[in-house]
Length: 306
Image 1: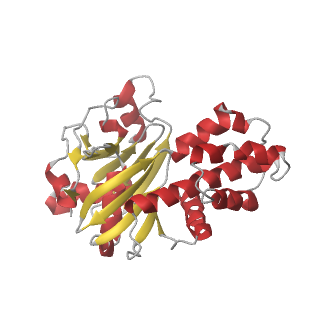
Image 2: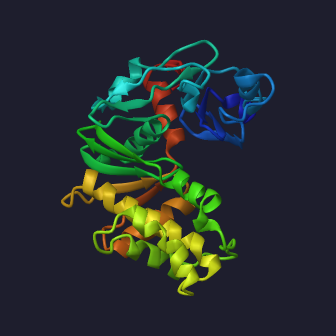
Image 3: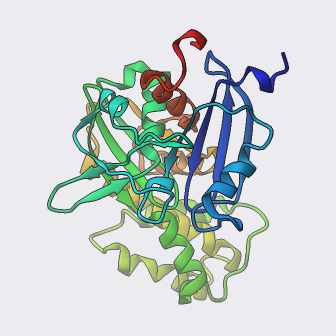
């Protein structure tokens, strides 16, 4: 039997700009992993079915479970949110099932200031599977275009908050005066990044006033044009870390982790360090673990292959 023929389940992390797929064996080992740019806003001709066919080309006809924006209003099928606080076990019966592809529901916070997530809930589940000690009380941070900070208590997501740090950074660099005169750096400017993080905590000035310093410091010759990008990154990350800890942090809780792409998580970890806060542990991307766990718990995978 070939490696691919051993596959019993396909997991997909289907976001806005990218699509990732994993073929698993019966023990949850990844046999093949693929990534392409067919997120829900960049589909090939033929739409969602065509994108699914491409990412799974040559793989066996096995159950498929997807998480992320594929279940949103603009996705393949709109899947209702689960309301927080929500236990990890609630997902077992809440999957949106269909013969072609099943979809994981997102999470919704129904407070005075509501919030939503799609895809990150599966990474959170994966983190709790890999690290059971996080289930009792922990803070899980998921950097990205829209970074999520989630508070975990007694194996439940009790609260979370979204920070648009990644999207804001892109908008400011490409569509505001802050990016004018700056140049693309050939290497990371560590000093500019550190200065940005430190500036984020100075005085009572809010982020809006701090932002213009990315331009004024360059004009004053205190940061180089190629350092503006890292300075602005540090400023935004520093502000997010301070606000995230104020909203969801618990100084008595040292179980904090960062999930996601390694380079971005390391940058967040550096911001924590510069601010003098305990640095969260880096766990990497846990979506694959979360998808397999959900599929097995919901019995999408036949019991005789477990």
